Length: 185
Ligand SMILES: Cc1cc2nc3c(=O)[nH]c(=O)nc-3n(C[C@H](O)[C@H](O)[C@H](O)COP(=O)(O)OP(=O)(O)OC[C@H]3O[C@@H](n4cnc5c(N)ncnc54)[C@H](O)[C@@H]3O)c2cc1C
Image 1 (tube, helix red, strand yellow):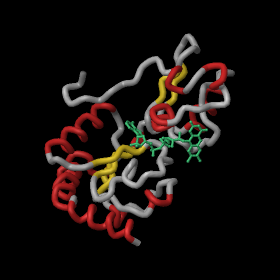
Image 2: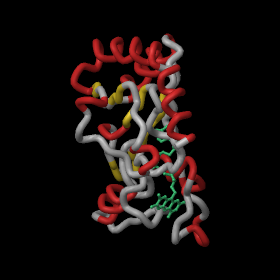
Image 3: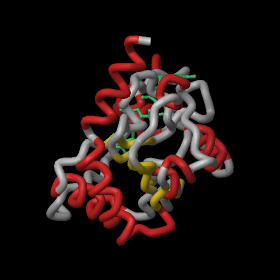
């Protein structure tokens, strides 16, 4: 009860800048922007996170769009959360309390590179999607045990695999991350 009240107070305090930001995002991202009252298809795995509401949720389709969203957010001093697979157990981790939730679900490609040693994976892909795709090439990877955990959160904040005794943590097997910055570097 106390926690719920604290979450409500935080959400109210953020309302002004969040609404302004959502309206601005709406102009540029139109159908990829969802307000909670219409966002009936969205749910997040962790129930604590599922119980809170962002001011709006946006689904970028490319790195360029992610950069633009971050630019709008920072211009408005707006709080945000980034959602990969949504398995984080902390409130506000990947579903923003009264801020903007950036949902990576549309950037979920999995492309095995030509030499079949590395794979390019979008931050909205789940471990299950990566397993399914690389298995078609007779490959596997240092992944976790549950299919709908996100590759982004897993490689950033998890990383323990059945293959770890031999190959280390997931992050030990990342060749590079694409990092979005405001000046495209
Ligand atoms: C059922 C279950 C099984 C699990 N099994 C394993 C396991 O076998 N091995 C293991 O090591 N761990 C395991 N975990 C832990 C899991 O790896 C972590 O909780 C992980 O952080 C979840 O990632 P996600 O993308 O699904 O979650 P999210 O909640 O979407 O993301 C987790 C964090 O990463 C941030 N984030 C997500 N995407 C991005 C991005 N593109 N850029 C910047 N930040 C980003 C989010 O903001 C959030 O703070 C498990 C968890 C659960 C609930």
